[in-house]
Each structure stands twice: as C-alpha cells, then as structure tokens.
Length: 160
Image (tube, rainbow, N blue to C red):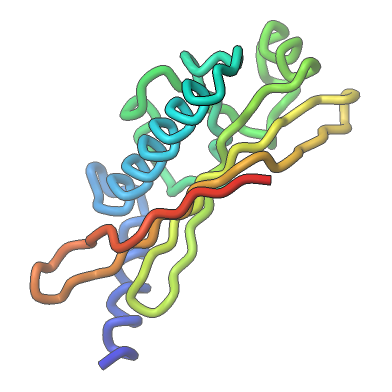
C-alpha cells in the first residue's frame, strides 16, 4: 500500500510541476511561506527587534514551474541565477545583505516536506555571493486517500 501511495504522490507532484494554475502544490508552498512569515513577524515582535518585516525577499530558484508569485503579498521574488540583470537599487541592497527566504521541496513516501529557510544573501563582488543560514520552518503535508487532499501534519521552526 505504501508503494502505491508513494507512486501516486510522485506522479501528482510531477504532474503539478508542469505549470498547472491553482494546483495543490502551489497552495501548499504558499501556505508554508505565509506560515513562516507569520512566525517570523511574531518572533521579531517578541524580541523587540528593529528588523524590517514589512517586505520579504524570496529566491525563486527551487520553486515549482510557473509559481504564482503574485499570490504572496509584500514579497519581492528574484533569482540568484541572474544577479547582473537586477536593477542597480536592488544590487545595492544585496551589497548590504538582505534576508531572503529559500523554499525547498522534498517527497518522502506519502509526504511532501516543504522547508522555508531564512538566509542572509550578500553580494560581496560581481561574481561572489555569500549566503548565511539564519532560521527555518518545516511543514510536513501528508496525502489522505480518504479525503483526497493534502493535510498539514506538522510544522516545526528552528534557528541557528
């Protein structure tokens, strides 16, 4: 039974990665990003930090194909693959260093594990970028055959 569910999960994810609009995978990723942002804002409020949490930056590298970037508000998406193509004002921010969210997807048995990690991205020189890990949130979704949908089973947060 586990093998069949695993095959269904893999086929589902592969099908969804081909750019279906409003697909379930995008919804899971969006939910995980929003959950991380809420937790991050709450942590900043508790610590009385001066860190600006009004705008977040997300690295597009690793997101599903045709991810609906406009579905998450107050977020700027960019790719590390094309830093030279970015506006000079953004390159200037990168020289100082900005906290950027990275999204990772992993399939294991009948689960999709989505990791949203906060990392400081700093452009040291033209072809030299530094990335330092700060914190992360891990959301574990499991497919319910009875309900025919993905359900959040666990969310964990941590940091360095």
